View 1: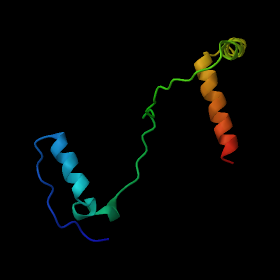
View 2 (view 1 turned 45 degrees about the horizontal axis):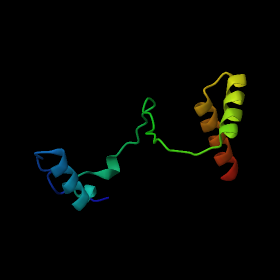
View 3 (view 1 turned 90 degrees about the vertical axis):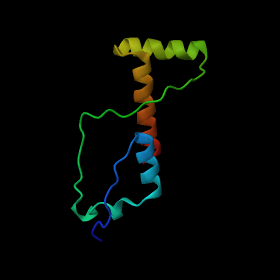
View 4 (view 1 turned 60 degrees about the vertical axis):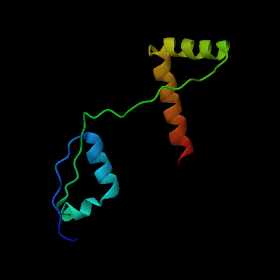
Length: 90
């Protein structure tokens, strides 16, 4: 791994810094051989809202099942989707 040979400039804004790093290789500025992997256990993954069209009867069925399990119906849907995805990717 090559040693860093360049000094990081002082940036006036986040936009300027972002543009700089998009055009430059970090290995010219950091000794990546000394990089350490970190974990951030309290970091929550970003989520995205989606729109999903379901028949009223289908949604009612999901809500009834969620009620039986005493969980919010949207949480139950996420659990089911995660299980199905895990199944499909095995």
